Length: 407
Ligand code: AMO
Image (tube, rainbow, N blue to C red; front, side):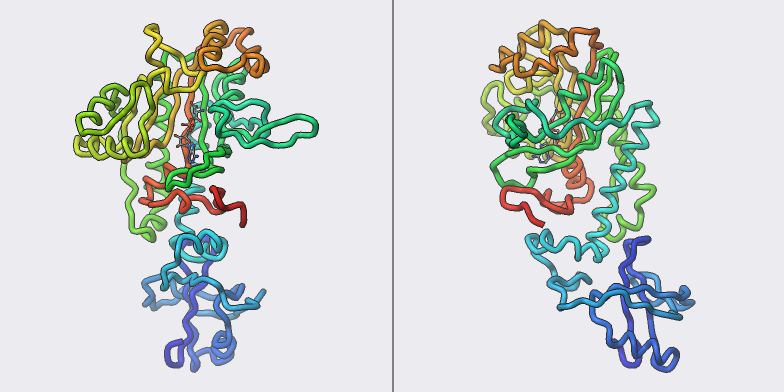
């Protein structure tokens, strides 16, 4: 309240910025009295017109004809939705549903929806079909240690870590699919870049000529998403004080071994045949950025550091697995798969897996499986880098991590 004027910011759903209603005692005395008594957090609707005078820097000002109150808060709000008082991350997560009334929080999640919207548009334009694969599964694709067990009647089942096995099976009938899907991973550690329930944009394509075809799809997808956001999410970027950068294909490709050499020359230890640690990835990001590459593929991962389903090169050491790293963070991984039945059985045995547990998957490889490949792009990881978020928990409305299963 300022003198004989009441100013109320109303969070709506059309714009991330609030509507600002200005009520003057001498201009609209009744509404002024009504508005004066409103508590922060009241659910209301107003009718009015855009004011010819626009003084607020925060949103569009309105002159109001009527206000209808739907629900008043029973208690003062536990967080400052206006954003004048900074809120700790813990509290932000707990009361995200309330903080979505704040322009910053709203902008983050509108952009999240924009990423998914853009991905769908891209895939549909390229003839990919959207599919849904089961989230209760009998076998995992990404290693037993990160499977969440589920009691499924008389059987043991798991929450799906990845649509990997199913999207591959589908190559026999739908050689271009995509899925926007949760990944459930029982990773015990608590980091700023891992969730136990995260979301991915997964794709698989058949009749490929090589892994390059898959990288091209991923590259195009990421560029399409960033272009789409740059064009259609201008206000959201403004509220967040960022400008999503334009990415242009082709992205730089660096061999896994080159990355290892660069890192070793910086004194970072990388044991033979092991994947890069988060710290090593980060360092590589800094080195690559100095060379002008913020986004780049790491290609040719060693067999020892990959899942069983990636195609091995003739030398037996390298595979056709790649990662896509953006500003020092892995945002996606993928590759060409092993589509030859015998080689796939051999690969499973080599990784210590029992082919009998994967019979439903292996069977599909008996009936004319085309060469294929695909990838999984982490939505929250991509958001972290596009929006400069420090913690992955800022990129998902309801967080599932080591300690959180509510709200
Ligand atoms: P990967 O395990 O690398 O590959 O996962 C793909 C991408 O998903 C994101 N991601 C995560 N984000 C947050 N928290 C997690 N715990 C988490 N785990 C994964 C990352 C990662 O790059 N089946 C393969 C993909 C494929 O080959 O098609 C897979 O799941 O951004």
